[in-house]
Image (cartoon, rainbow, N blue to C red; front, side, top):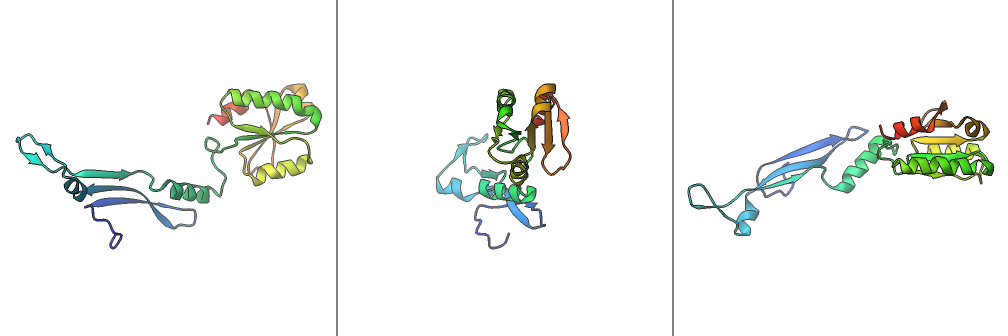
Length: 176
């Protein structure tokens, strides 16, 4: 790129497109002829003579902040399950369902998942909306029926339809 201030030598820049089609430079590979000379670096070649090495600069993602910004913009904050800081929010319908919610939370954490309980201090509808607004991949609703059948009612982010599944099935979804 003309005028970008690089003085090293030839380079390759890698650009990625964001959600609205803009390109951002992230990765780069550059040959550097200047720094080895400046630091008086040398090596003895096969011919027995001193030679000045060529330094290779490589940056896979560019600035981490830029890459994270592009990722968040591209996904509109709805991170994939493996990357989401909180993968599951557990929503007990009432305080009477909290014990089972704690059991589910423990199983998720034991399996390496990231989860939290949104306690029954607000209405279930508000908590489902909170989960959707926070773009949590899975909201798990727990009530009498779920406790009786030892199953979970799961709503995936962005979907309106709930699924009835066993905890083992949810744990498999978290590993995808």
